Amino acid sequence: MIARHVRRAFAIALLVFLASATGRSQPQEIPARIVSTSPSITETLFALGLGDRVVGVSTYCRYPPAVAALPKVGTFLKPDAETIARLKPDLVFVHKGPNNVLAQLGTLGIKTAVVDRGSLPGVFTTIREISTAANVADKGERLVSDLNAGLDRVRASVAGRTPRKLLIIVGRRTGTLTDVIAVGPGSYLHGIATIAGGSNVLASTTLEYPRISMETVISLAPDVIVDVGEMGESPADSDRRRQITEGLWRSQTLVQAVRDGGVHAVHDEAFVVPGPRIVEVARTMARWLHGVEPR
Amino acid sequence: MLMRRRPVVAWVGGSGLLFAAAALLLPFVGPSALDWARVWQRQEPDWSILTNLRLSRTLLGLFAGGALALAGSLFQSMLRDALATPYTLGVSTGASLGAVIAIAFDWHTVAGVVGIWAGALVGAGLILFVVMGAATRGGQLSSSSLLLAGIAINSVCAALILLVHGLTGMSQSFAISRWLIGGLDAIERSTLLVYMLVVIATGIIIIRQGRQWNLLAVGEAWAATRGAQVRRALFQGYVAGSILAATTVALTGPIGFVGLVVPHLLRGRLGGDDRMLMPCAFLLGGVLLASCDALGRVLLAPAEIPAGAITVCIGGPYLIWVIRRGGLR
Image 1 (cartoon, rainbow over the protein chains, first blue to last red):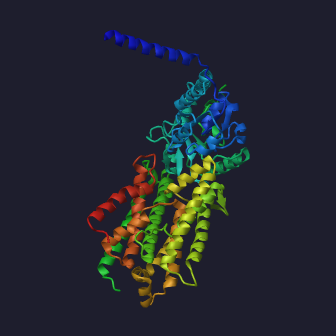
Image 2: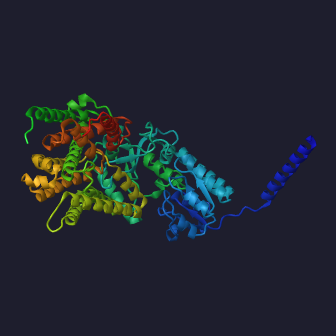
């Protein structure tokens, strides 16, 4: 009786070993046709050198410029399963969201990978998740290592300096300075601001993106305000919006940053896309906060 | 119809006192502590925070809440529909569509006016004519045709908002989503003054015709036998209510609940006489919205909670409590 159990256990162990050995010997192919459903995924895929395999991107993807010619598959909140299916992808990257696209793609037999989104550590997690799913894990580790080195250089450039009070605005009512949505703790811009020698004036709030009033802007007295509230569709459009935004702020003379010339209207989408351009964003912030030019 | 004078004076006077008290006290509620010595000596920024930002916001809340509650009670009487709100007849959704188009096409300013406000007013004006045209048949206008035309146009505008929203870029899409939540914020003194004058003038016109709304609330045929000019009354009521709703939506975005529930809660206490109900609805609707906004400013300070969310969180359970007690008519 016991001998029969031992024989059965041995047979199972042998099968498991053979299966794993066979699995290991199979070459891990890089997917030939990849679909991205968000700007951060697209930027990560291109940074991993997989740009030529991307066959579809989200409506909001604009960087790198090569994506302009690619088919659009909806937004990261609501990717269109039918459009994705027509592209015959080998792998589709999606964020967790309030939609049933995962189930729809599963029904169609399309392979998907769900990736993280939001915080600064999430940028690195996303890179690892994408590179692992696309079978280029080594490239992912190299990219993570490069980005960490870049952020360390920014950190070093502001080391020893007193952190400056910073307010980052990511949304407001068009053409006004009302209904202001700012960056609180936990968000990816908060993390980058800390590295660049900034002290987020809303670090003590409990919300990731709190709505604040102009009274709060005045009373928090930030040294620097970064306004990402309006993003242009093109460089010329962005420049026009930047001028309008700066004009709106000029009238707010009770705000410390306005008096000190510390308001920066941003027209670069890198500020709102948590992806591989984080070092670029950190460098810009360090320049605005401390006037340094990190390598 | 005669009203007993004492309850009228008591209710309207009491509501007026509450309104005045809110205007005086709520500016002292805010996310940051004011230095009273600096306020007294008119030193900045404390002086401007109190007199420009908080006072402006409180007055906007008082008049916006008042305008929505008054428009709600007017439409409920005029259309004899307990579920009528300032948004029922399409004009507010037209205003929202105009504002959403202004955001999508990036109209920062139009003829010196903030693009969203201009877009909302133009949208509301156009829809007002469309609804009026659709509801009028053979020169006749009835509350049922107005209601049906309003609901139809409302749906079309809501669909167009979704369409425009879906076609915009990320930044505009975010701005539209935020605008559709609605909320109060400080606005320029000159804009606030114009808005208050419009609300006061329109409010007086509506409240002065309280007897007419009482007659329409019973029925159009019955109102006609009592000497009411039904077509003219419906036209006036629709235009006046739309002006209140459209100007409010232009400045605050859509804020729900106040226009639906305040008239119902008051009707439970005061009865259905619009001559007393309407002034009280205006005054107490304003107090409710401004108070909820003040609460939203401090609950998670320095973060804010939109006034509309607080209004529903407090008003909803209260309404259910009133219904359970049988206090709603």
